[in-house]
Image (cartoon, rainbow, N blue to C red; front, side, top):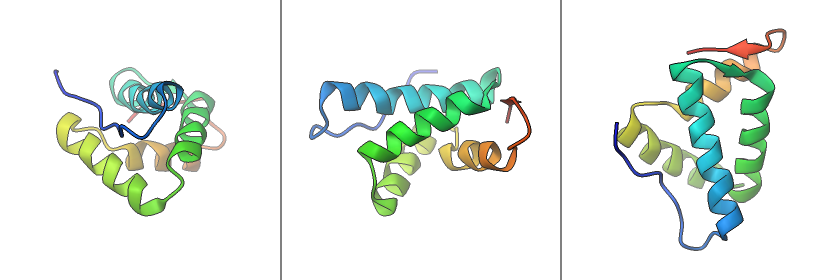
Length: 89
């Protein structure tokens, strides 16, 4: 599937790479499954770049609209699955 990741021109290159890494982790959670800790680490990095809840919702909504993958659902499952090593949605 071809789509663009939601990015801000205000972010540095490193920040953009970290945000894309988070969205790639969400994709993996849906497609193959992912190590729970890896997804949570990517989410923590994402939250350092996008600390505002409103901005997070907007960016994740754009990602879901273009990809069909819900970052919210992936992170929620990872948080709920504390005793599991891998998650798949």
